[in-house]
Image 1: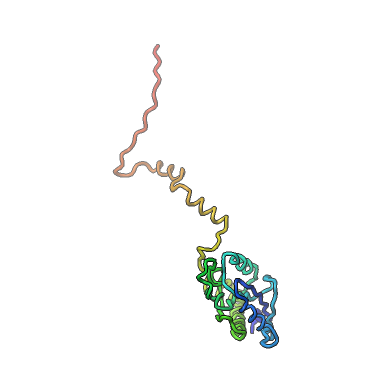
Image 2: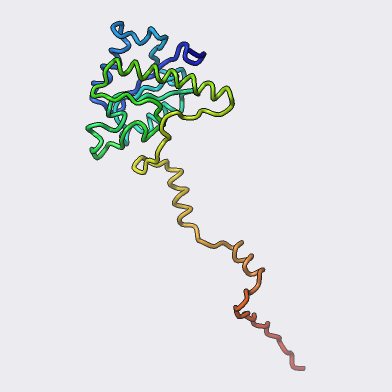
Length: 210
């Protein structure tokens, strides 16, 4: 066990689950299964958490919340998707308001399927996350950066787009293909081979009759 995994803290977020997986998460923290015997403590502050445990699927209302919690966590950090809804969207993935699993919003390192996921599966997934946490800590110490062990973050075309990004894309689409600088450069090059040279009309000379 490395330094990063000696006493990892865990933050739990309920995306849009039926509460079945949330009850199992609480059960795994109780004395019967006692996840805390590994030094893992549940916290409500993402800035203190090392493991991000998410239950339920991602929809248009909570995708930004999931991203915000993930961005507040310090490196190294690990994400665990608990339950089939958090893994793939589950039975709700064909609903009009469901985007998909947690990996549609943030990178996921460990998947713990089940409907509802059992406490034993949660404990196994969290302990696997602790191993990945140590591996990420070693990579950071070696200067390699916080590489994601799990799946990379995919594109989410149906997710809400930031207004600034949307405005930038609209401006880029509306911009003309050419510019004044390009026109000046083209004029400075002169006519190409095979092109007729257009003569500029001479300025009219005013004659004065004396």
